[in-house]
Amino acid sequence: MTDTTAHTQNATRLIDSLVTAARAAQMVLGTSGFATRQLALREAAKLIRTHTADLLATNKEDLAAAVKTGLSDAFIDRLTLTESRIEDMAVGLETIATQPDPIGAELARWQRPNGLDITRQSTPLGIIGVIYESRPNVTIDAAGLCVLAGNAVILRGGSDSQHSSAFLADIMVRGLVAADLPPAAVQIVPTTDRDAVGAMLAAVGGIDVIIPRGGKSLVERIQREARVPVFAHLEGICHIYIDKYADLTKARTIAVNAKMRRTGICGAAETMLVHQDVAAEMLPTIAADLQKAGCQLRGDSAAKSLVPDMQLANDDDWHTEYLDAILSVRVVDSVDMAIDHIARYGSGHTESIITESDEAADAFLTRVDSAIVMLNASTQFADGSEFGMGAEIGIATGRLHARGPVGSAQLTSFKYVVRGDGQIRG
Image (cartoon, rainbow, N blue to C red):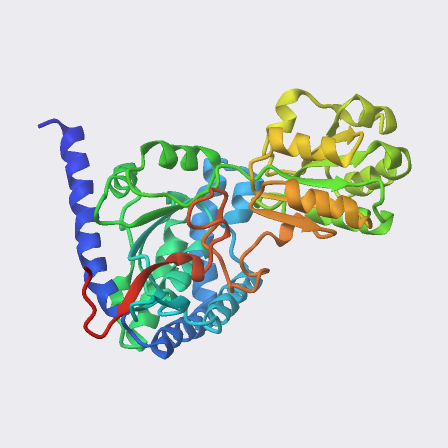
């Protein structure tokens, strides 16, 4: 047996052991009372606040290693915990706990002529594997949503956030224990070995769904290799379209916020489309706002003619998720051209139209086939917490099962409960 084979087999045994413990825990968690699951989240929120100083100190270890490795500023921003971000995690758990119970919800009910009473009822998905990179808060968001929906979760954080993620996972386990729920309902893979990812992706019959959170290379690998169903988006190439009936004040503030509030998140705008009838009036002003905020602009020839210091864009720019202070800009001749551009270059994540025209808004919101479409709002609202879900595991851009922010309600399946009174089929 080669060293590589032995290494792979060890990873498989590790994941199998986690799955076995998770399955037993999920059977208890999935039939537990709603109040008990809520209590686990609230207890974890208290512990997050209690250990703020410890979390910051632990996170500094990860940050020091990231700086030494030479990781990008955008990557380090995603890795960084602050007092505000730690408080956001605690508030997120408390908000998740206020959501309706996603388990046992009556989704539909009807009676057949033979007297059978049929109910479609929500149930937990089972065991969810979450594979993520630099964001420590994913540990809390994923675990909190899974617990509320009665799912066991196996977390595999990236090596860059190893210390922070392990600390946060332990807090979630302590919340479970405080609520007298099985601690194996939340487990973190105790190794950063890449073979563990492969073992998770191959765990057919063990892990019920994989959810990746990370960069394009991670998601591409998971979508390519997974034998387990996957909820994911590959890229967040998000667009804002400034229509000819746009309000300039709204367009200015939304454009800057959509791009520059946080450039490294998947809901950050990557391309701005501007209608030719208002480009001369609006584009120089909006461009100046963006440049003042530190944004580099790359435009087509029409945009560059109006903003000469803009870099000339090439076709690759329309395909690029920058995750940085860079925005591509194109002048379009109609809402139809804007929709066509999004259909050709977009990733199906989030798009927003800025307009005061009901007709243009209706055309955009109806015909743009992305997971999230917006009117007169920043694409940075593409977030489960902003949707009132408390948090999200990610944004799903596929068309099966879950689409858009994946909250606790999206982490359920359903079963049919059929009640009879002696009926037999002839």
